Image (cartoon, rainbow, N blue to C red; front, side):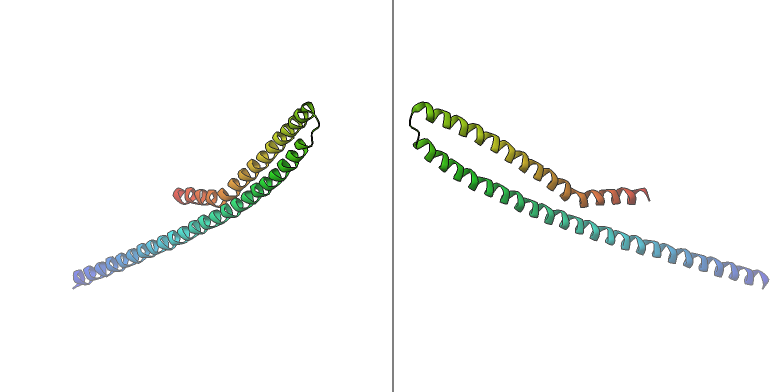
Length: 142
């Protein structure tokens, strides 16, 4: 009987350890699924924030370009009237030359401004995505 009792005790110990090990493994798997779900939700939130930021920035840049276009048309119309009032060909050429220089300078300033807006927008839109890439790298290290 002693051998039977000892064997039974060993089997009970083995079964208890196997159950404990299985429970711990299942808890780890469940935790991994929870962590992955949280990671995926945070990534989706980052994509949505990035898209929202991009749309807002595009609207701002578009507004800036529309405003510049209106101003440019108004200045061109005023210049055309001024050209028409020229009293000589030489005066007309001088006015056209001045207008062309002023127009080009204004255009370059405007395009520089739009470029700066676009670069800032891209940086802002990429921030949440960069954070998710860093989080993924950290997760991969585990």
